[in-house]
Length: 540
Image (cartoon, rainbow, N blue to C red; front, side, top):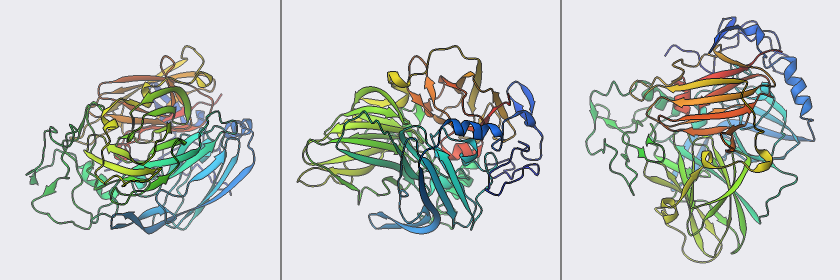
């Protein structure tokens, strides 16, 4: 497909300083010197770029504090997923998820990435309001970190919360390249005894020859070219499946190629249906669903004592799967979404789209309990175990009744009073129509596939309203880089939100972090197919 991607090489007008940061020369991309906005054409020279002086000025206002040094190595490595399954993949070190990075709000994170992969990579700090030249989007905020190269990400971490990091290079995020980033609050108001970081994932890389790149190549052909497909034994209507969540448990196969090929078997998913997601639940039939890198056949066990109050920090690092999460025998008290506190809400289960995070408190009983993450609409469940006493561990097929109880997601919560956005009329409203279909796999924003020269302008100091309008028949988790917005009418502060088919969601934020910032669907295959665009700050 001939289209600009996040691997687009920076234009010749952009020089690189000795530190590897972009300089403040030209914001030009892809050989053009003008960027197209939703209201006309704005010269690229009118935009703040990652190397502009405004970036350093804004960083100084954050008052960078004590330095926390971290070394991160991206490598090709075998990983044991448990249950007798070992895969060869790309990961941070030899762990899945990668080793947690933990800092305190106010610290300066100085993380050096060493790239030992066979291709270029990057690191994006999902959910952080950080300096633009550290956001980790090749072709927009930095150059690729080439194979064999390294790069130091250095920035002030101003807000506490549950975050994570992953590449913004192609579909690398759907390998093993992700890890939690926990920012502790020096004045933490919550009281709890233990903390359990829970990272959810859908896994395909290295299974029977599959890779995320091969999955993207297959999906990009769309459903219009399905001649010769063998649909035998599959529920194409979406009415089957387990416990009312209709799907085909197997990806489609072809009559001409029934056995795995070097690029793997077909992973295109048909009939995955979820009422919570407004219909179609996903495009990819994953062979495994993981909690903290483990299959249900050999799950992680977290130990505590009866009566302990545990803080769950739940992160959805999946590529194409929403997860519904519950702890058997317990109700959850949701306290945060996407790093920001909310009015506490009692629930049986929580729903997270890709990129979302939810924090919850639970006071635990005595025994061994399943922490179950249902792959929403796909009929299979990832599993971990909480053990506080004796008794048999839950089996790999454990499905606690709480999954069928009350379910909440971040967009339904209300912001805690201290973090509510002050009321105000927007100075600017930008509408983003989410467009495309599974049939032709032409995902886009406002009907235009991603082009880094396509920018929607804002100015520092403005109250900006973003309207996400889903014109497709599929849900999309939309993510804004570098900012946290507020849902309407006192709703939660978030950076990633589920937008259901036919739905319009309006969110507001104060433009206080200059630079060029991505807005995109966090379904990695939708994003790489074109459902991304850029929000650009105009020079004052």
